[in-house]
Image (cartoon, rainbow, N blue to C red; front, side):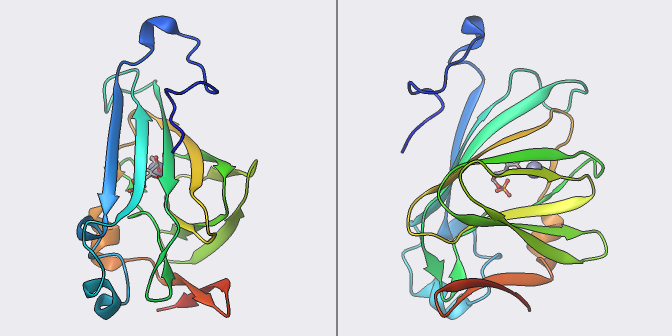
Length: 185
Ligand code: F6R
Ligand code: ZN
């Protein structure tokens, strides 16, 4: 897996290099709420890594005026016929937006407004996605290789995971005849 600390992506601000970097992984055991097919999920190894995130926090959390940067790597795979995907969230301060820029792989950005209207945008290397405020966002890997994308968001945005873990998105992204399809639950 490539990394924001490896050559290729250079920190220009040398004094910040290697500092305030947070790395997490999310495994099937951490994602029980989000996948639709619980029977398929139970048959899989709970330690399977679904995605990894490296984030760079040059300022304190919840402080207005800064920006955060992160790269997400989603592994290829499915649970039943649903693609490996992120938890998904609204920002805690609802009107905060975000940019996603796809680096490698194929995927879909799934978006949902506060009225639970859900739609999706195709992700491919070079695709840039502006996520408006008040919009929940989740990404799914629809290819056979790692999907990676960079994200840029305001430092005071925060994350509301509870709403999605309790209510989900109104649509799920499944593989049908080898292709992604967004269907109502
Ligand atoms: C930050 C952001 C991304 C996600 C990452 C993992 O606001 O949208 O960096 O945090 O793609 O997804 P979640 O946070 O939904 O587990
Ligand atoms: Zn976000």
